[in-house]
Length: 347
Ligand code: 5AD
Ligand code: FES
Image (cartoon, rainbow, N blue to C red; front, side, top):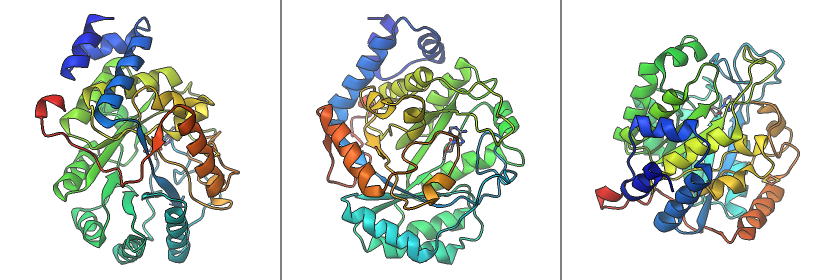
């Protein structure tokens, strides 16, 4: 095995130079995935945590260049679920055996603090952990959601390359994104972040910085996915990210952060029909099946080729359970909070 990987396996630390070397060289890919999988097994065992994803609004005030929900995309049929629908989907998710629901949407200003808090409180009655993924909000909003019962928050940094961040996110501020991550930590959320792999002009050096950033902010969850060009965005003609590179960024993140929760992302499965299982065998320990019903799934088109758009929540639940069991893994029955290990050396 490569020296760098041997060191990483023991210390869970790598320099930027070492990360770049592994990312840009394919000779040790097999070893990389093997080490990441072993670390996952050693620290977290064989349990896979399922999170039921509710995509409750595709209305967005942002203009992220890569995203199909961007406000300029007039080809997208917009929708917004009612409070009752959201609560109903969460109730059904708990009946399918999920212990967490993820409430995700575009940056839709019509969900006021009061409305979100009502939804969160209602869903808490179903014995579910709640993850929010609804974008940049003020400290006061995050505080109100936390007090209403939200447990976790996902907000990807997308890229730590400030120049690239600026190019990709018109009218947004990198500094504010960082502030959101800080506020969420301070308020006691489990904080999830992550990045896109394969953005135009993104370098391996910048991906190495992303990985180091995840460690620096002491993230509880990290989601990594390849960038998939959407025909209705300004990046339609770009090449997009490679499955293998996204998997490598994910595996390195696992090696550096042995106890965090890492999802096998839907975008990975979009590029490779077995992508989530491969990810679960390369460091991931979480899957986020869709529990949105009806035609909404198709309309939540962040990128083309999204999996499961014609499936029902029960089909996804059964499908993923069978896949997970087929590789000798089990489905967790607990909430799947970040199991921090006190020995700081091991984190
Ligand atoms: N390809 C892959 N992932 C995307 N996301 C947004 N647009 C794309 C795309 N074209 C990801 C972002 C966002 C998450 C919800 O979806 O990383 O944080
Ligand atoms: Fe949706 Fe397999 S997870 S059909």
